[in-house]
Image (cartoon, rainbow, N blue to C red; front, side, top):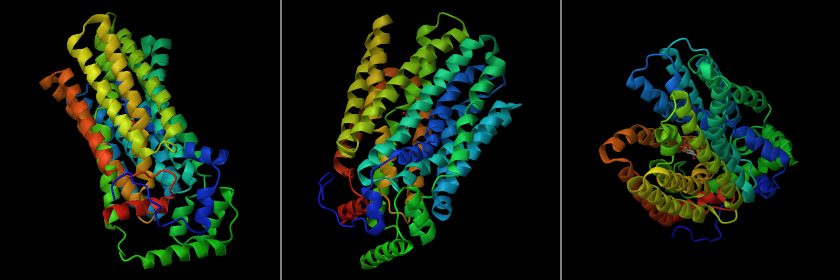
Length: 478
Ligand code: BGC
């Protein structure tokens, strides 16, 4: 079947899962979602905060150590994501989410009280591990309790929190540098790092009281706890109903000819999510975010180090705000318009606006250059935010069966972080070798390839139950 064709898929949600799918997402659902996505906030905060304070860390940092501080978070995150997979399938979503928050808090506090470069590097690695582990689980947890018609919007909250985290990291740095410009090399950078501990500690305490994923509990045969988790979500079911649902799911699985957990459909889904993630990263979204303050600070080199850092930060904060605002449209339209159309539009927009920004870099000077580059980057980021960023994290959570969701989602997150690492590390070399405008054109070309990929391989999964989504991929594979 061609991607995007909508048939009435089999694998309909059964028994108590139907109640979960058909439910209205009330306040508690949104609360749980935000709690699951606090790691997304820290993901945004911690990955972009380094760029703001890097120039003020008073230790002697080799090039390698500097590179590691900027890009190493992504490597740590790749490691964290891959470890999280088997652990979350074995010990549950909730336990891992609590442990991640604890590691976040420890990493942030150690960064703040660090005594030398080695300790700073270890602390940032800890933060990276937690970022990766949380990114592996958050949308999987959400997909396992979200009503089918709201799963898209609920999962986009993860992207939203990432974007808010990025923006807040710039704003906090700006505020602290403005209040205490004399302390940039002493207290300021420590405070900027350490503040990440506040949401982490709050999340850890609140996550301890969140319900475990009902689908995961059901899958593990823990029926009394499944019933309790349903109860917390406002759905009264009996233990017998839960057991009947489990029996029915088992009967459906037995009917299937393919008894493997990693069926061809599941593998296809994994490949599609991984390739989507590779495109999400290699099309260059993090170039403006990680290098933005530095690249843009170059345009305002009039004052001293703090002044030019602040001008760079202000410009990056404007782009960060565009990112937050544009993500609202993803949130609004993902369940109405669907994943495919938004992703197609998003990548197509990235092609157009990156070309415009590249033209600005190549052919303009002075004020006109700043305006065109900012508008181009701004709309590039908006296109990413509407169709690409959140869509990636959403499909990562929704397309796998519960039995392997943790591992598959974690594998995909690992691919995301490795691609993130690759582009962040390669960008400076490519920039020197080809010049900024050519690098931007290469990124635009990659976004064009992404359009073709989405058109060909990403099926529409809006409004389906997660059980149905799995069947869409099985049928595509058939
Ligand atoms: C990506 C990040 C990126 C962020 C920007 C996320 O979806 O995974 O790499 O920094 O979006 O908003």
